[in-house]
Amino acid sequence: MDFSIQLSAYYPDKTYGGERVYADMLEQAVLADRTGFDAVSLTEHHLINILMLPAPLQFAVRIADHTQRIKILTSVVVLPLHDMRIYAGEVVCADIFTNGRLMLGVGRGAFGFEMDRLGVPLDTSREKFDESLNVLQALLSEEEVSWDGKYYKFDPITIMPRPVRAPQIMMAVMVPPGIHACTKRGFHIQTTPLSGSHQMMLDQVAAHKTAKAEMGDDGKHLTLSLSRVGFICKSPADRRAKIEQAHDYYSRFDNVFTGPGLVENGMIKPLPRAQTIEDLADSLLICTPQEMIDKLAPYAEAGVDRVILNVNFGASQSETLDCIQQFAEDVMPHFAHRATQAAE
Image 1: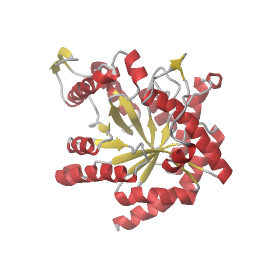
Image 2: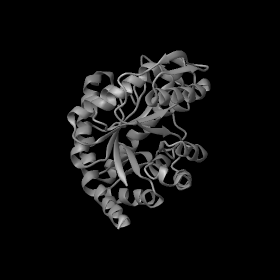
Image 3: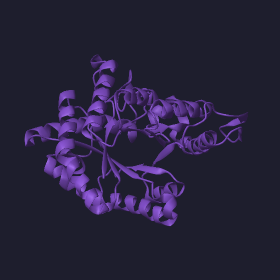
Image 4: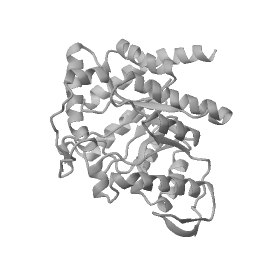
């Protein structure tokens, strides 16, 4: 099982400065590359101060320029917010500029506040996403593409430059039937059991594995990545502090994900949460290295290919770098050893 660090910009204090936020993320990417992580992942969100990255492809290029081998995942790009006739060329350039290390994770959007204000409400984003994805795939794989659909109508065009290699596309999807269908279409999968339900995770992985088995050799290369919030803690007091930070983070996340979307001057208002700190602690991977190993073991046993670890929810940069370093030293070798044994 491989591991990725999610470079999810969290910006609860404007005085910290956007330049400093992205410098922190770049420093995390460089450390992840040096310590053996498989990938870093980049979100796309606009107009809000959580998961704040309006230009993931640009940042992917910058990361590639400062690292040696680490993969760079977009998790995820919100396709309905882009014009595929322009975006396809940007993807080709980003793939070239990252020397083929880019995996394009795509999704329909999740935050109503963001989507409404950018003109693609969530109640229409699904059908626009579906058409956008089809247009993007056609433009990246064919020359002289024309289109006559609901959201796109254009005469024949050819995206230039032409792709150097077939782009790797990863689909963000949660429900097991959707995972099965998207895997059968040849997509890598990114998912998460948001509720923390173990059975949900097992069902998600099973849907992916079933689809791959039905595909035979055509599906062997397809992967499933599982996203979780987590952090390595040094003491019970440190664990409590990190869980409180995560609870505060989710008071903003819930506001735009499932709540009313109360945002003022770009800052999401924290709202009271029904979930207690204790219940949240049970569902997150905020723990000691040994506890982390124990919590991740069922993922490896189930067949998860990559865990995307979100460590950016309020800790200082020095603490976050220490967490990445300790995770690489104390947790990752355990699963590398297990993977070697499984391959033998």
